Image (cartoon, rainbow, N blue to C red; front, side):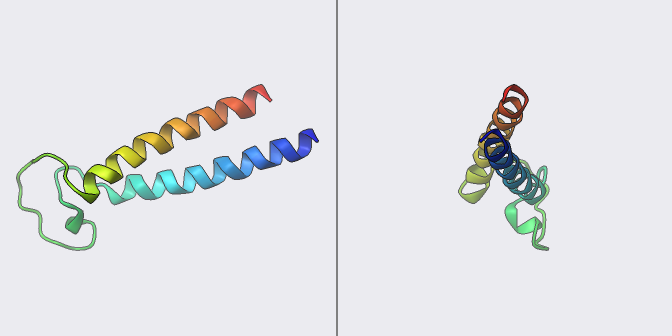
Length: 76
């Protein structure tokens, strides 16, 4: 039973790490989301809106979940 629990935690941690890497790479400092896909950078900093804001909060949530899963794997 412990093997299945540990294997499940490893799969969850692997999936979280892949999604975390993707969300981090999609963010660019000081650029709009269009800059990721080859758009022009306007050169000004502004507040996060729309998909950028969602992507920012998703990155934070994924990082917390990754930390919790890593800590759970150590304890179990």
